[in-house]
View 1 (cartoon, helix red, strand yellow):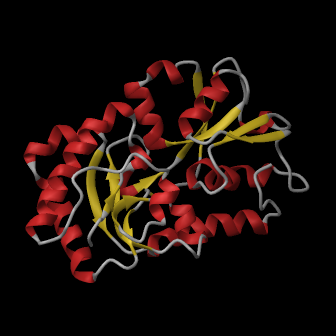
View 2: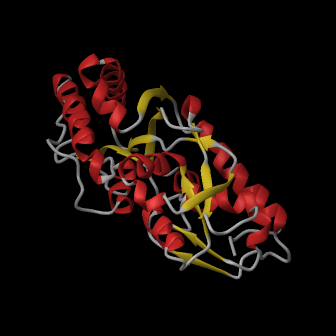
Amino acid sequence: MSGAVASLGMYDHPAQHAANDQLWTALAARLRAHGIDAPDRLDRTRTVEAIWRDPKLLFGQTCGYPLVTDAALALHVIGIPAYDAPDCAHGRHVSYLVARRSDDGSLATFRNRRAAINARNSNTGHNLFRATVAPLAQDGRFFGDVIETGSHRASVETVGAGAADIAAIDAVSFAALRRFDPDAVSGLRVIGVTADTPALPFVTARSTPEETIVALREALADVIADPALVEARAKVFLADVILSGPEPYARVRALECAAVEAGYPVLR
Protein backbone atom coordinates (compact mmCIF):
# COMPACT_ATOMS: atom_id res chain seq x y z
CA MET A 1 0.00 0.00 0.00
CA SER A 2 2.26 2.76 -1.30
CA GLY A 3 1.71 6.11 0.41
CA ALA A 4 -0.17 4.40 3.25
CA VAL A 5 -1.65 6.47 6.08
CA ALA A 6 -1.81 5.80 9.82
CA SER A 7 -3.59 7.73 12.56
CA LEU A 8 -4.47 7.42 16.23
CA GLY A 9 -6.38 10.67 16.40
CA MET A 10 -9.29 9.42 18.50
CA TYR A 11 -7.28 9.09 21.73
CA ASP A 12 -4.28 11.32 21.24
CA HIS A 13 -4.15 13.91 24.03
CA PRO A 14 -1.00 16.05 23.62
CA ALA A 15 0.45 14.34 26.69
CA GLN A 16 0.01 11.01 24.88
CA HIS A 17 1.65 11.98 21.59
CA ALA A 18 5.07 10.56 22.46
CA ALA A 19 3.58 7.26 23.65
CA ASN A 20 1.40 6.90 20.56
CA ASP A 21 4.41 7.70 18.38
CA GLN A 22 6.46 5.04 20.16
CA LEU A 23 3.72 2.44 19.73
CA TRP A 24 3.33 3.30 16.07
CA THR A 25 7.10 3.09 15.47
CA ALA A 26 7.08 -0.41 16.97
CA LEU A 27 4.01 -1.44 14.98
CA ALA A 28 5.39 -0.02 11.73
CA ALA A 29 8.70 -1.87 12.18
CA ARG A 30 6.84 -5.16 12.52
CA LEU A 31 4.75 -4.41 9.44
CA ARG A 32 7.84 -3.59 7.40
CA ALA A 33 9.29 -6.95 8.44
CA HIS A 34 6.29 -8.42 6.58
CA GLY A 35 7.13 -6.33 3.52
CA ILE A 36 4.38 -3.76 4.15
CA ASP A 37 5.09 -0.12 3.31
CA ALA A 38 4.12 1.41 6.68
CA PRO A 39 4.46 5.20 7.06
CA ASP A 40 7.10 6.60 9.38
CA ARG A 41 4.71 8.89 11.24
CA LEU A 42 1.12 9.14 12.36
CA ASP A 43 -0.96 11.63 10.41
CA ARG A 44 -1.98 14.52 12.67
CA THR A 45 -2.48 16.99 9.82
CA ARG A 46 -6.10 16.10 8.95
CA THR A 47 -9.38 15.47 10.73
CA VAL A 48 -10.16 11.89 11.70
CA GLU A 49 -13.21 12.04 9.41
CA ALA A 50 -10.97 12.78 6.41
CA ILE A 51 -8.56 10.01 7.37
CA TRP A 52 -11.36 7.44 7.74
CA ARG A 53 -12.25 8.09 4.11
CA ASP A 54 -8.72 7.80 2.76
CA PRO A 55 -8.49 4.64 0.62
CA LYS A 56 -4.83 4.39 1.64
CA LEU A 57 -5.63 4.10 5.34
CA LEU A 58 -3.43 1.32 6.70
CA PHE A 59 -4.20 1.73 10.38
CA GLY A 60 -6.54 4.00 12.28
CA GLN A 61 -9.25 4.17 14.90
CA THR A 62 -12.85 5.12 14.28
CA CYS A 63 -15.99 5.78 16.29
CA GLY A 64 -18.42 2.88 16.41
CA TYR A 65 -21.42 5.01 15.43
CA PRO A 66 -20.36 6.10 11.93
CA LEU A 67 -18.96 2.60 11.46
CA VAL A 68 -22.50 1.18 11.56
CA THR A 69 -24.51 4.13 10.23
CA ASP A 70 -22.42 5.61 7.41
CA ALA A 71 -22.65 3.37 4.35
CA ALA A 72 -19.96 5.40 2.61
CA LEU A 73 -17.40 4.59 5.30
CA ALA A 74 -15.41 1.76 3.71
CA LEU A 75 -13.51 0.34 6.68
CA HIS A 76 -12.48 -3.11 7.87
CA VAL A 77 -12.35 -3.75 11.63
CA ILE A 78 -9.02 -5.17 12.81
CA GLY A 79 -9.74 -5.43 16.52
CA ILE A 80 -11.22 -3.87 19.63
CA PRO A 81 -8.86 -2.19 22.10
CA ALA A 82 -9.28 -2.96 25.78
CA TYR A 83 -8.43 0.02 27.97
CA ASP A 84 -7.19 -0.01 31.54
CA ALA A 85 -9.52 2.80 32.59
CA PRO A 86 -12.64 2.85 34.80
CA ASP A 87 -15.74 1.32 33.20
CA CYS A 88 -13.74 -0.02 30.24
CA ALA A 89 -13.40 -3.72 31.05
CA HIS A 90 -13.19 -6.38 28.33
CA GLY A 91 -13.05 -3.99 25.39
CA ARG A 92 -16.16 -2.05 26.42
CA HIS A 93 -16.63 1.59 27.30
CA VAL A 94 -19.30 3.99 28.55
CA SER A 95 -19.86 7.71 28.64
CA TYR A 96 -20.11 9.78 31.80
CA LEU A 97 -22.82 12.38 32.12
CA VAL A 98 -20.99 15.35 33.59
CA ALA A 99 -22.26 18.60 35.06
CA ARG A 100 -20.80 21.35 37.22
CA ARG A 101 -20.23 20.48 40.86
CA SER A 102 -22.46 23.38 41.80
CA ASP A 103 -25.39 21.76 39.95
CA ASP A 104 -27.22 19.34 42.24
CA GLY A 105 -29.55 16.62 41.11
CA SER A 106 -29.86 13.66 38.76
CA LEU A 107 -30.33 13.62 34.98
CA ALA A 108 -34.06 14.31 35.38
CA THR A 109 -33.30 17.73 36.89
CA PHE A 110 -31.65 18.84 33.65
CA ARG A 111 -34.92 18.99 31.73
CA ASN A 112 -35.08 22.19 29.66
CA ARG A 113 -31.40 22.89 30.34
CA ARG A 114 -28.64 23.13 27.71
CA ALA A 115 -26.66 20.04 26.68
CA ALA A 116 -23.32 19.93 24.87
CA ILE A 117 -22.34 17.19 22.43
CA ASN A 118 -19.09 16.78 20.56
CA ALA A 119 -20.83 15.74 17.31
CA ARG A 120 -24.06 14.18 16.07
CA ASN A 121 -22.10 11.29 14.54
CA SER A 122 -20.45 10.39 17.86
CA ASN A 123 -21.41 7.23 19.72
CA THR A 124 -20.16 8.36 23.12
CA GLY A 125 -21.10 12.02 22.82
CA HIS A 126 -24.51 11.62 21.16
CA ASN A 127 -25.77 8.06 20.62
CA LEU A 128 -25.19 6.83 24.18
CA PHE A 129 -26.39 10.16 25.56
CA ARG A 130 -29.61 9.93 23.50
CA ALA A 131 -30.25 6.34 24.63
CA THR A 132 -29.91 7.42 28.28
CA VAL A 133 -32.18 10.45 27.93
CA ALA A 134 -34.86 8.73 25.78
CA PRO A 135 -36.95 7.35 28.70
CA LEU A 136 -37.25 10.88 30.12
CA ALA A 137 -38.15 12.68 26.88
CA GLN A 138 -41.63 14.10 26.28
CA ASP A 139 -42.93 14.62 22.75
CA GLY A 140 -39.44 13.94 21.42
CA ARG A 141 -37.75 16.59 23.54
CA PHE A 142 -35.94 16.81 26.87
CA PHE A 143 -33.40 19.64 26.71
CA GLY A 144 -34.07 23.29 26.09
CA ASP A 145 -31.11 23.49 23.72
CA VAL A 146 -28.29 21.30 22.39
CA ILE A 147 -25.02 22.72 21.10
CA GLU A 148 -22.22 20.96 19.20
CA THR A 149 -18.68 21.65 20.41
CA GLY A 150 -16.47 19.58 18.08
CA SER A 151 -14.67 17.49 20.72
CA HIS A 152 -15.06 15.91 24.15
CA ARG A 153 -12.47 18.33 25.52
CA ALA A 154 -14.47 21.27 24.17
CA SER A 155 -17.66 19.85 25.70
CA VAL A 156 -15.94 19.66 29.09
CA GLU A 157 -14.78 23.25 28.73
CA THR A 158 -18.25 24.38 27.64
CA VAL A 159 -19.91 22.83 30.70
CA GLY A 160 -17.21 24.11 33.02
CA ALA A 161 -17.60 27.65 31.68
CA GLY A 162 -21.39 27.58 32.10
CA ALA A 163 -22.17 27.78 28.37
CA ALA A 164 -23.84 24.35 28.69
CA ASP A 165 -25.08 22.42 31.70
CA ILE A 166 -24.45 18.76 30.88
CA ALA A 167 -22.48 16.61 28.43
CA ALA A 168 -21.67 12.96 27.78
CA ILE A 169 -17.92 12.32 27.84
CA ASP A 170 -16.22 9.14 26.66
CA ALA A 171 -14.71 7.21 29.59
CA VAL A 172 -11.24 6.95 28.03
CA SER A 173 -11.20 10.65 27.15
CA PHE A 174 -12.33 11.46 30.70
CA ALA A 175 -9.58 9.27 32.16
CA ALA A 176 -7.01 11.13 30.04
CA LEU A 177 -8.31 14.50 31.21
CA ARG A 178 -8.25 13.39 34.83
CA ARG A 179 -4.63 12.25 34.49
CA PHE A 180 -3.12 14.84 32.18
CA ASP A 181 -5.42 17.85 32.48
CA PRO A 182 -7.07 17.64 35.92
CA ASP A 183 -7.96 21.33 36.07
CA ALA A 184 -10.28 20.81 33.08
CA VAL A 185 -12.52 18.45 35.06
CA SER A 186 -11.95 19.62 38.64
CA GLY A 187 -15.15 21.66 38.61
CA LEU A 188 -17.27 18.83 37.22
CA ARG A 189 -19.07 15.84 38.73
CA VAL A 190 -20.40 12.65 37.18
CA ILE A 191 -24.19 12.50 37.55
CA GLY A 192 -24.74 9.31 35.58
CA VAL A 193 -23.25 6.58 33.39
CA THR A 194 -24.60 5.44 30.03
CA ALA A 195 -25.00 1.93 28.70
CA ASP A 196 -21.80 0.32 27.46
CA THR A 197 -20.75 -0.52 23.90
CA PRO A 198 -17.57 -1.94 22.36
CA ALA A 199 -14.64 0.47 22.50
CA LEU A 200 -13.53 2.44 19.44
CA PRO A 201 -12.24 -0.13 16.93
CA PHE A 202 -8.88 -0.23 15.21
CA VAL A 203 -9.56 -0.23 11.48
CA THR A 204 -8.00 -0.27 8.04
CA ALA A 205 -9.40 0.64 4.62
CA ARG A 206 -11.79 -1.97 3.25
CA SER A 207 -9.51 -2.32 0.22
CA THR A 208 -6.57 -3.45 2.38
CA PRO A 209 -5.46 -6.95 1.26
CA GLU A 210 -6.26 -9.85 3.54
CA GLU A 211 -2.58 -10.71 4.02
CA THR A 212 -1.98 -7.17 5.28
CA ILE A 213 -4.88 -7.48 7.73
CA VAL A 214 -3.34 -10.70 9.07
CA ALA A 215 0.01 -8.91 9.46
CA LEU A 216 -1.66 -5.98 11.24
CA ARG A 217 -3.24 -8.32 13.76
CA GLU A 218 0.01 -10.18 14.34
CA ALA A 219 1.89 -6.90 14.76
CA LEU A 220 -0.68 -5.60 17.24
CA ALA A 221 -0.38 -8.79 19.30
CA ASP A 222 3.42 -8.36 19.36
CA VAL A 223 3.15 -4.72 20.45
CA ILE A 224 0.72 -5.63 23.24
CA ALA A 225 3.10 -8.34 24.50
CA ASP A 226 6.37 -6.38 24.20
CA PRO A 227 7.72 -5.60 27.71
CA ALA A 228 9.74 -2.69 26.30
CA LEU A 229 6.47 -0.93 25.48
CA VAL A 230 4.76 -1.30 28.86
CA GLU A 231 5.14 2.40 29.76
CA ALA A 232 3.90 3.57 26.37
CA ARG A 233 0.85 1.31 26.60
CA ALA A 234 0.11 2.53 30.10
CA LYS A 235 0.32 6.15 28.97
CA VAL A 236 -2.54 5.55 26.52
CA PHE A 237 -4.35 3.08 28.86
CA LEU A 238 -4.02 0.28 26.28
CA ALA A 239 -4.17 -3.13 27.98
CA ASP A 240 -5.04 -5.48 25.13
CA VAL A 241 -6.50 -5.75 21.64
CA ILE A 242 -9.34 -8.21 21.05
CA LEU A 243 -9.27 -9.48 17.48
CA SER A 244 -12.72 -8.95 16.02
CA GLY A 245 -14.81 -8.05 13.03
CA PRO A 246 -17.65 -5.49 13.04
CA GLU A 247 -20.29 -7.77 14.58
CA PRO A 248 -20.06 -6.46 18.20
CA TYR A 249 -20.95 -2.97 16.95
CA ALA A 250 -24.53 -4.08 16.29
CA ARG A 251 -24.97 -3.01 19.92
CA VAL A 252 -24.35 0.61 18.84
CA ARG A 253 -27.07 0.43 16.21
CA ALA A 254 -29.45 -1.30 18.65
CA LEU A 255 -29.23 1.61 21.07
CA GLU A 256 -30.02 4.03 18.27
CA CYS A 257 -33.03 1.95 17.22
CA ALA A 258 -34.31 1.76 20.80
CA ALA A 259 -34.24 5.57 21.10
CA VAL A 260 -36.03 5.96 17.76
CA GLU A 261 -38.70 3.45 18.81
CA ALA A 262 -39.15 5.42 22.03
CA GLY A 263 -39.92 8.52 19.96
CA TYR A 264 -36.57 10.21 20.55
CA PRO A 265 -34.60 10.00 17.28
CA VAL A 266 -32.57 13.16 17.92
CA LEU A 267 -31.02 14.41 21.14
CA ARG A 268 -32.90 17.62 21.82
